[in-house]
Image (cartoon, rainbow, N blue to C red; front, side, top):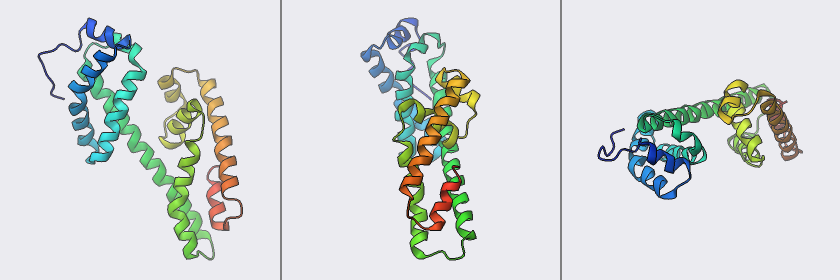
Length: 202
């Protein structure tokens, strides 16, 4: 990231303002670094829409974790690290979604009769799952997305959310129970092939 070197955005005063929730400091931070964050995301993703989404998430993450900024020595390096981590999380989530679809396709190939309607359902079934996940309470959703969609470990999730492992397990258990129940309800009366999708979550 190549940014305006005339301003010291790693100074204690500037970072203290950020950590204290000073909106003016945050606007300066955003205006100064947004292009660099976008460029870094593009380096990994090669997709403007995805890079734009990651850029937004980087600054949302900074605002949510602004109380930690007083411990940052090099803001530019910190921004790159946050960007890289969110990009990798995004890629892992895409990989997990691809894995779910692959499992679903394997279930479909075991069925003796796959109708054209069922093949269309395959394209929509993942969106059903993602939509149900978005209905979870915020903390449960964060835990579920990290572990089930991004594929990170319980320990990593506990570290990122600053929660103990038992709390993470409880949130995950409640989230999984809700997702299974909602999927079962949504797929009730559906084809045998679609119901096999539910087995992935049981």
